Image 1 (tube, rainbow, N blue to C red):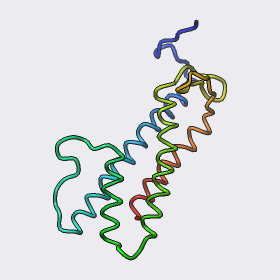
Image 2 (tube, one colour):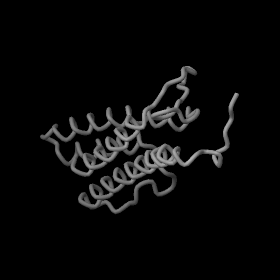
Image 3 (cartoon, rainbow, N blue to C red):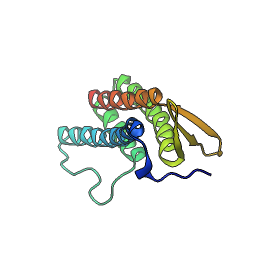
Length: 147
């Protein structure tokens, strides 16, 4: 088995390592966008509590809170709730991809890298696919702020 230390990665692997880091950062930015949106909604409703004052809430809890606040704000308009449902579906898909990358990363391969999924199957992930998911995360963050 060929085990490679991170310090042994070649310069041509820099794009891969950078993209994996960008995926992690884009997810964090999505979380921050969601927290910002909830804070804005709370302030508009006269509530000044901070999001997750004691412990950092999960994305599921944040999305539940967002859905609740939007439904209170837009009692007669279901379009925002429909958009939130779409955002949640996209987030779940991207989160599964993110988990595959973070938990299953194996090694660089030509044009991308290999991962092992939860069933121990090897999957090749192309750098283009990684870039597409990073862009999708940025789009979802913008959609969240627009709700």
